Length: 240
Image (cartoon, helix red, strand yellow):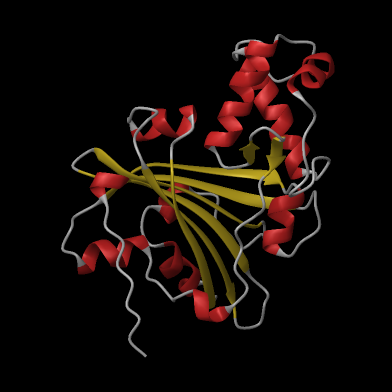
C-alpha cells in the first residue's frame, strides 16, 4: 500500500479510493464492514475509521446509520435545463475587477483510470494530461484547479502555457468549447487540498466539477475547482 512515509490511514484511503475508481466497489453499493476491512487491509479499526472519514469528506462514501457505509452516487446531471454556460476563472476575475495570479502550475502525463476515462470518453489506461493550478490574489490562494484532458502531441507540457486562461489556450489551437456542464456543491477539504489552499480542515469550500467538449466531440475536458468559501462568489445568470 502506497509509500511508507505516508500515514497508514492515507495508504488505506488510497486503496479504497482506487476500489471505487476501478468500480470494484460500485456506485450505490455497500462496502465491507469495518471489521471486514480490518482483515482485508491488515490494519486496526481506528485506521479503517480514519480512512473512511477521509472518503466521506471527499463525498466518495456515504454513511447510512445503522445500515452501513455505501459508495456515493455520482451527481452528474444529464438534463440540459440544469446547467448553465459559465466563464473561465480568468474572465470571471477580469469582469469582477479582481487582479489574480497563477501561484503554481504543475503538468503531469498519467494514465486514465475508469472514472476519468468515462469523463473524457476514452479507454482506461490511455494517456491523459493532468493540469494542476493554484490561483490567487497578492500571493494568497483563492482556488485550486485540477484539469484532465486526453494527451495529444500538440498539447504543450510547458507550465508557462497554462498560467492564464485554459480556454484561450485551447482557442489558439483551434479547439473551441461549445458544451459545458457543471456540478456545484459545498465540501470540506481533504488534508491535501487544505494544505495547498492553506486553510484548516473545517474550512468550507465551493467545489465545481466542469465537463466540457468541442462541437465535434473530439476534445473533452474534466476539471475539479476548489474555491475558498469566503474568498469567492459564484454568479449565475438565468437570463434567456
